[in-house]
Length: 266
Ligand code: ARG
Image (cartoon, rainbow, N blue to C red; front, side, top):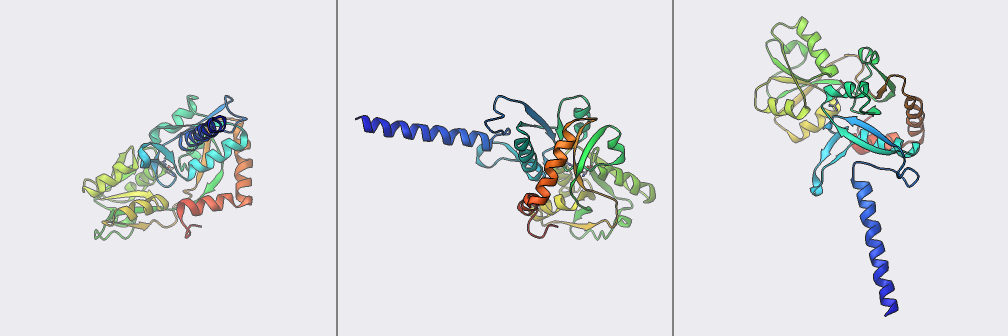
């Protein structure tokens, strides 16, 4: 009898442990025991940007996952914080930092001079290129072919900035700024816009799922890299930079790049 009770309670403990592990690993907050009940770092992101950040719905739960999320989890754990993730439109990310509603932003965000006036950035942890995405067969070979076309861009992104620049030198190019990348893809597929400017790594995923779309790289269009953004003068910048550098030298960053962007990624 006694022994049986012992077995039963062992099973109960095991089940509880598995339950807890699943809750931590699968939820949108992480933390080790040291951080439990301790301080929480709040990350804001725009989870419309696979493979950087997107909402994974497999398994009946909604979870924000991706390259940025793995990096953020690692850094938070290393610094002894729990991580909380808030999903908002890209255009609202910098205002969220300025209003103190987030400790940092990871959203494949490029550290532009303009943004640096309002927020601080970590070092760049990943680079990308700009591409034009369009329905197959529309014969677009580069920016010069965007004359007379409606071009989708994400509101508040460097793609919107590039679109504005191109519009100045391209007759009849009309910009259609949209909040979410998947809206842009939907508009493209339904023919309400003719093309979109999206970065190569993100476009690749949408192209793989939509064989009726194609893309072409826009040559030499300045940096499109990603960095972590913080409220001005945040003390976290140095901590994040230190751990990003460690991730580079330990090979962990390379591992995550291969995990999310595939073997061909630089
Ligand atoms: N790299 C571009 C920028 O900084 C686009 C980033 C969009 N990110 C997102 N999560 N939707 O403007």
